[in-house]
Length: 232
Image (cartoon, rainbow, N blue to C red; front, top):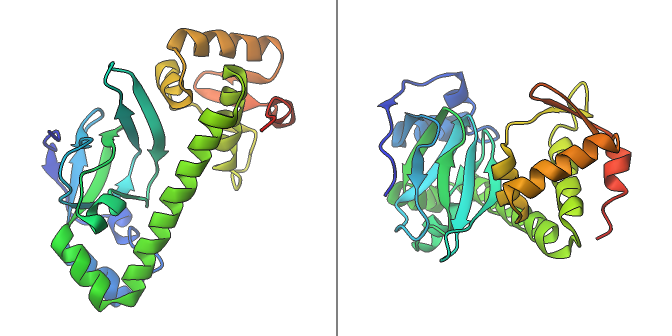
């Protein structure tokens, strides 16, 4: 079952930009039919195989999507950033959520009921296109994860690909070779399908080879060297 949120929040700057790209009139309508809530770190928004109730829009913070195997192993599909939509495919098809969504840090998340989502898609083509764009984003992210897990030949290649992908997400940053490492070694292991111990060993090896340097929570990467490890 999903974890109960701490409290509801009033509209904020993040809330006003959640529906960016949509006409103001539609954005205002969406604000009246969504409920924005604060979730603490570790709170579960919805669980894998739980019946879909609607969609979630991340206004502030990060949410991790994961699936669990019958033997208890967890695989993190991806980290959902601000402005992204959760549960769109399940909601549109009125089926169960395919993954578990858990707040990686304190988050503001809006919820829109399935009935309101369908009504808005039928009456506003701009909103239907907006939803389609988010579904496309989800599909592309899934393809990247499949490439990382299935086409990478070794754990070191998987880690290198993950780090390069994180750098790509910060392509417009002032220092594109620097990034804040928000994932634990255990979470990184769950993203590339290996153990926490293996990730720790790989990081030590990367540092020894001068592929990366670490300054507290900030990682400084040698992008060209990391890319040389990626063969697929």
